[in-house]
Image (cartoon, rainbow, N blue to C red; front, side, top):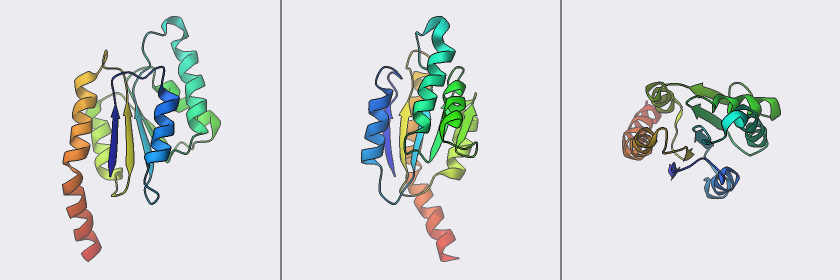
Length: 148
């Protein structure tokens, strides 16, 4: 499992971060983006999130998880493009996101965490640490299920 923690800011380099995810992503694993709100967009926030979401839908992502307020429009835009509703899920609470990741993550997955530290710095940093630290537990539980 690889975790790319780029949670300092969502803009302007979201496209570049997704390119890194595609290049770094392990060939056998899934590419999963966990994205927060893009900040400082004012009255254009919804439109810009939708536009970025449509671009996301054309990337080679397996799953897109969005967190917080306007990021839900990233998911809506991605679904308007090429991603299915199964591939996109929006979260308003970090605990819900962690529960989903605990169930969904697999050995070989590559995660991109991208969000603004202005809004949720500690939560995304802790999420990155949690993904890395829980990697050992994930490997153990998958090994046990493979043995049975």
